[in-house]
Length: 220
Ligand SMILES: *Cc1c(COP(=O)(O)O)cnc(C)c1O
Image (cartoon, rainbow, N blue to C red; front, side):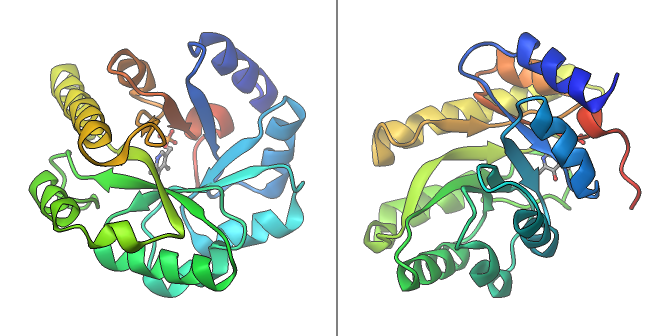
């Protein structure tokens, strides 16, 4: 299927209320244009430099999402235009985003990335660490970030039960954080990729991040 056909097919399969982030990392701007022509408006990138280059080159009604690990020294380059940062995994990063957003008078939407997988290579808060940080309360003074929800990546495995357990943990944590700390603004649960998005949706995801299924394999 072409990029256009993949977008149309996915939009047909996704239940109402589940947003599609088309992950265009490592693919050229022309691939984004093809998806854009099929009606897609939300795109995800994992490297700040590539995100900035595509933002410059492409239509301004695109919502750009940062989904990859973000270093504090790259925050300034994306804060002026990014729509949602999925990969917020530390207090320090939150403080940087808040400071840069305040400097230019923006409020930036963020998701808290939670570590649930078995691979050590993945990023994200440990549940206990996040709960301790939220209870301690300094986050309440961050006026230029808006906490919108949770993001997670399941283990890379064929064991569907394991993936399901991980997604269910993310969903439970999302619900409890909303109730205990954040309220109704906290409305986004970002989980599910090419290999596991159906399972993620069954487990309560309302934002899937899909790359290779739409754009084909990436050449690293
Ligand atoms: C690359 C990436 C995706 C998309 O992965 P595919 O398997 O190509 O769909 C989703 N989320 C994150 C965080 C990624 O880095």
